[in-house]
Image (cartoon, rainbow, N blue to C red; front, side, top):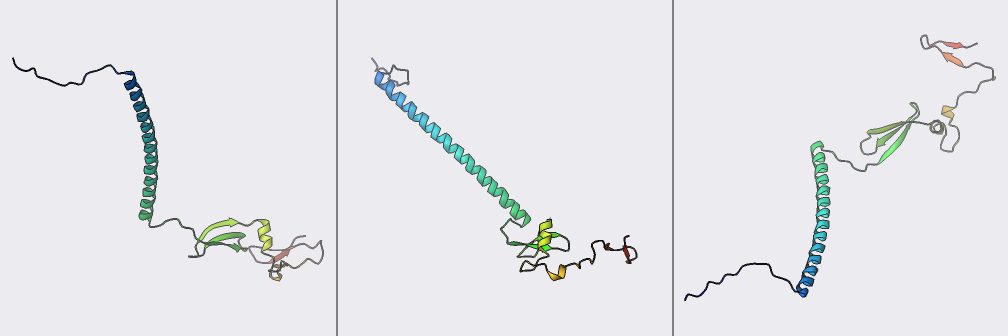
Length: 146
């Protein structure tokens, strides 16, 4: 009689109590690894997003040939126009203009000692009831209101 052919197959088998406890421990370990990988995936996704932003910003810089940098600027008063102008110290370009407040305009009338600058003093009226002199825009002639 010929020898029977032996074949090995994977079939379901009943687990012992010890084997069930081992599989429970293995499942808990697997769950922990899954959670850790999900955290890593989130961090990697965040890292990818950050690098995409960097890539976009660099593309914009390359495209325009310009990038934002800290540049020293100085506020320059322009009392004739009642404004302050923010000027770049490297190029002299005006980057912002703002209107002076009444207090700002008054500061322009003071010299370095805090005294009224003689160059901006207006002559005082001789009498309180004196009318101010007005110049006509058309003729340039002076007239007095009565």
